[in-house]
Length: 342
Image (cartoon, rainbow, N blue to C red; front, side, top):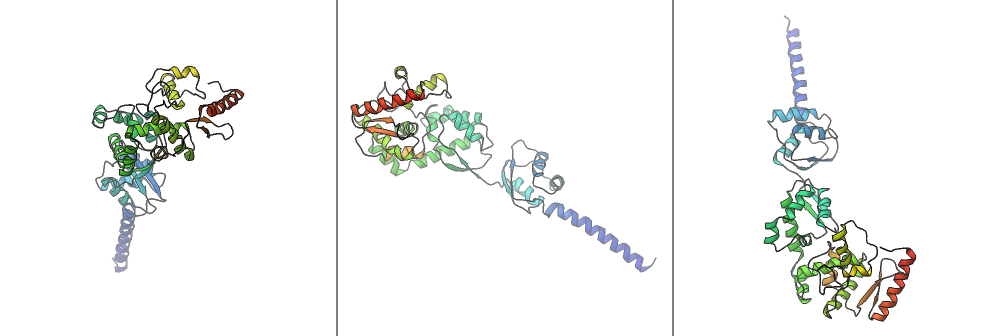
């Protein structure tokens, strides 16, 4: 056997071994992710489920399972994982093994009910809306924090918050409470005390302001008007509370475009035509702008307001009942022309 032949065989073996070794190396450490992306791994996902999800942005997702087997990796930790272009299967598996996920921003605006709020959160996190509701309605949690099923919505201050996607319902709820307590800083607490109002009362009034006007610039004026009524011992006579009473009977999705005289007789602690003071709890989730409008209300002498027909979406304010009656008459005529009966 010639030396040339032996050298050729050795070279071939080395070449084949090199190719195999290179391919093996590539499967483990080579570029697997083709573009920056986000991988959501649910609590119930298996490695096969993860492989299927990786198929959207992986060169060869099947190699993921091969590498996982070599590394004795069988159960990925749930979470939201940010993948970058060029990551290898080894990088991905290490990330899933230790649960090195990236938090995300969860945002929500004012919601009328806890049910709607829970649905909004379930759209952004792994937890479902029922779990959120059950957590917020937990008797021990409510009792410990002096809350009720009707008042617990107040701990949810509309904003953007950072969460891990797979946070538990209780973990989410507890962070909302923590952020609520942080919101009520020394400055806000002093302003509430100056008004001789509790946090519950401030938020209850803020929820009325929220429902009364969508115009942020108008909210301090509306809040000042209601505070004027409270100081004089008048009932608030706020139509949003009547709508709240109607929906308690008819359902939250019941549309009320006009409050009727008969509605003012509804028996409810939330009827501010029948009861003086603020309602027992909030009637909807107020924005920060509405809460701060109460704490920093506009100082004026207005006692009445009516929806404006000249500037739709705004209100016309009055100091005297005679002025208000003229404004109200003008508004009712406009409603009748629009055919708004309910």
